[in-house]
Image 1 (cartoon, rainbow, N blue to C red):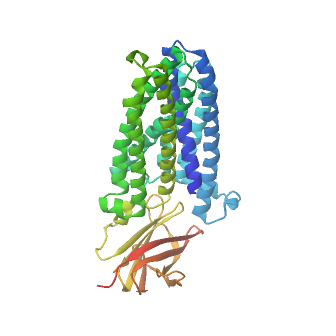
Image 2: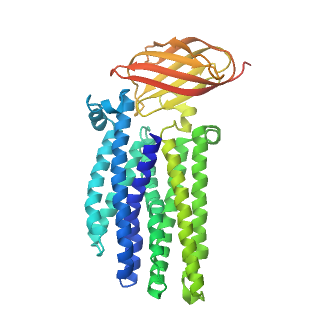
Image 3: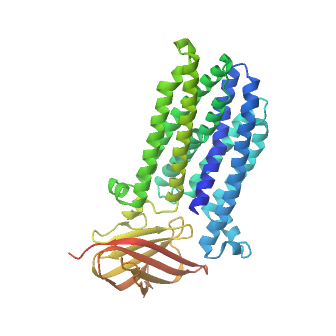
Length: 436
């Protein structure tokens, strides 16, 4: 699932990024140079290849993602989701499926606009506008496949809106880096080519500033909702991955600052730069774009992992029942098929009680026929102890008499048969403290 998500995110950002680059950077730069046909003839076929390849890859990986999600939700093998009609249930009755359908429509619209937009002849303004809107919708709708869905009250509006803008800004910046590098490879030693490169870099810089500002503001909003506290940001695996993503983002910002402040001015020969200085700056800009692309790819991989993990904020509270007892141990287990909140009280060595809540992707209670709860000690090869849970009047599952013999990272496993007929197995580590 992580590999498929990473490929799909990268393909989506690249397909949308080519559109943003062609409309806001390359085409205006060519118009400023009286539409240099040599550069267009060299650049546009490359842009077309990247765009079409990315769109096909996004479509293929999206189809695999749908199958894997249907298999995870049903507990069946991927090959069986078609014969049992599970894929249609997921497609028509879940947020993920509805978002998948909407994005498929955007793919079709985007494919139609690609034909005139990526031809070697300049496209009309309404084609450009349609392509930008479709590309923005295609990238932004990925928000409905992440943690932004399922919030309550104001969060249900603010978080998805921030995530949509975050994804569109990422496509405009990260997705346009490779097209920028390709444009810089077409630069010849004539003044017209250098002028195109200078205009393109300046326009990309302005696009990048807008994107970086948007990413920074929306990133703060997303981090607030996904982490919620410094403790959750630094003390959980999810939070640490999020910090790595933030660090890579600032590395990209630093490189972009060097491009704008030191290298871009050297493209203006009237400022006293020699031809060698100019082409040295162009070469360095190409290398920096490649480094930024690698950093962006690393961020995409981190995002692919984060989407399969429980947000760090869930380690401290849950919208369903608020704050947790101070002496309890808690873990939120988040998968594509179901979610479980496990609270062990007290969360220390001794005899304890566990409460398990089952949720669907909208944080609504998930109906189950029975539930078995297992705990395994930190030592390698420990034999799990299994208990049969009893459901209370509020729908939560209760487990008594859990014997916690030592402190450390225990493993809890929730094995349940859902009312829908599918079986779900959820497992995660939980920290047990020493006895007082």
